[in-house]
Image (cartoon, rainbow, N blue to C red):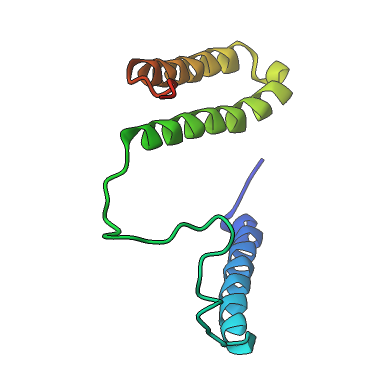
Length: 121
């Protein structure tokens, strides 16, 4: 099966249209939207917390460990679903590669256990 650079034109067009849509939407909403500020509208809504002090307060490391855990399992689902659908086509080579991938995910999970990212205080 031969492929050429012209096969990538639809992908490039889609990227240009998507980026153009985003830019036009942002610019259009800034021109068309109302611009009425008031003290009542500038207050935090429902669950907002009033800002006090400096914004550069250090975060607890637990926040980042939970974020790593979320990314770890999110990436796992993204790659395992297509692999499971095409399991027979990949054969032993695909099984070997998925084993390596799962090993790396388990290493990440063990890191989370070691850093106690799954324990809630």
